[in-house]
Length: 597
Image (cartoon, rainbow, N blue to C red):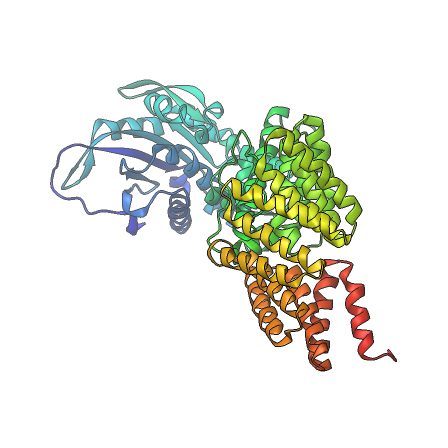
């Protein structure tokens, strides 16, 4: 423990320190070899427990006491760490040591915690506060508690420390302490003691019960931290101590629920834990959506904003999280409705837009949206109903159910208009216009997209104005009015360059499509290839697939069948992975290259 020691200088003024004293039970009855083994195990556990509890080595002064130690900790280190995280970690580490040690090298300790003024001099440290700490360590109630328990650690604090630190900090678990009358030499005090049988079995059982609430098969460290309501570092330590399987770095198997008597959590605690977890998934998924699809809808926030949601520095980080958590996100959406957290149940599928719209598979998304719609209706939340109807409208389009999509968006538009939600109405009109385009009702599509442009511009939404102009360009292309189509794509392109990188891909594809319609095939191919680069950058696989399909068409019209085949094969792989009906059209194109196949 030398790295924890500071050299004692000359006598100085009193300084405030947290005082931590430890004594090994039955140390003097052991052989020299066993004593050395005990000291090595104790100091190894001490170093790690302090470090993992957030107590820096540089903040500690340590004196060895043969059968124990005294550690003084600077006041800039929060005292609750010493009575909360530290003893729990030390108990777990001692249990681990004892599991692999012979009987006479096993360690059980008494620990006393106090705080007060101390003096350094040429011989070490002194002060009444130190005397008090050692009197507490020698108290009969503490000795008896350790002697009569199979546990490894008995903790005692002074009355002052309990009232000012333990009782004020939930992490210290004040309810686990009981009063103890101390009468040692001159000290007469009502101290507070935490018995050995609360370390760490109580925390272990509760942690396992909480983890078993997770709806998926595996859990990440940040999700476990939200569920157990502890910092990430503490969650990682708990997961290691619980012995759950680490399936990949930072991801652990979820334990099965304990069916034994008394294994359940109180209903209020259970509900609060589930809500923390679901709120964490919602907040993190929405942060991912903001990076991946910043132009898409934003549902009104929860009244109790989720804490500690992950934030992402790049779109790649957000995309990787969505892919890694896909099964858990689907399970969380189902659990939100099943557990009665209906305000999360309708918001979560919308936050998942970033993954399911761009990456798929989308059947999971449709199921989550339908469950969310039932939750929004149960709550009577009209805004929620409108947003989920819009989400379902887009999901229906992905399955080529365009009549159904048009009906869903029409209803969503009516609700948004009634609520005066201009942005929501513009968004729903965008979806309605697309459905009409796919139904070849191009004049209706032009009308819907024109109104969407006006509404987005009215609220100063440049990004969605650009999106609506892009959609209007496609509607004019459906009417074979490629001149008007090109004009709107060029307007949208100017906005996208300054406001929306992801829509830039669709404006470039649209410019290619308009030039394609005007028989300017070389120019069309240039724009298609630029669009493909943007879609790759943003991970928009649907955009990649559609661009490759049209790029293949352009190559075919220029008598380049090999280039066309390459594009269509790549498009086919994407559409098959996304499980979209585009697959049939691409297969037909490929067969046309070789009629005998």
